[in-house]
Length: 222
Image 1: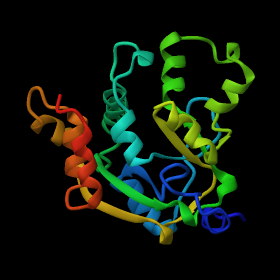
Image 2 (image 1 turned 90 degrees about the horizontal axis):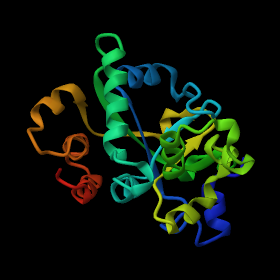
Image 3 (image 1 turned 30 degrees about the horizontal axis):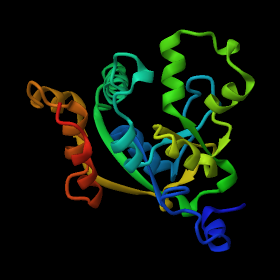
Image 4 (image 1 turned 120 degrees about the vertical axis):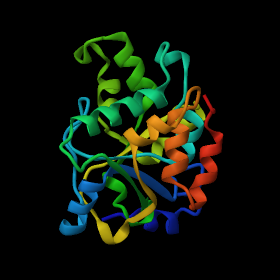
């Protein structure tokens, strides 16, 4: 097992803002989190958009800076698209699964060989075009499946692209910290008010009282 911590020791520049972030973040429901507490692991999720099972996470700095409106995503706003997906997930879930939890994962505890990255710009551009997945180039298919090693994340950051990390193994919960508040998305959306960016309102509420909360100020207010 090649942990990212070992790579950082052998390569002093590895793991800083130019490489893999020190922490990645995973959002889930309170019910799922309670199940994790019983199991002792964040377990692999179901396959999602052409890739194998994985644990999906993001770098908060990249999220606040890059997961926003871009010409490559057509007329929509990526943050709002992600929010709608989460809301639909909660609304379709059974009672008691409407509360959102955010988990902080130190990348130094992960196996570097199992951590991958993909560009959300490329993913949403593919979705907007309604192109057949089989018509894409082989290299792009591999990338969207989550086959690009996480150490290549700087390439996509230099292009100012939104990125998503995918870990292809269970993560022991002892290496994970729940931070901030547990929030109910449906309730917060009702209280957000007209003209308020619901993503910013939710992230501010979710991260209240944490160092990460300052990053939410980078989000637009509308």
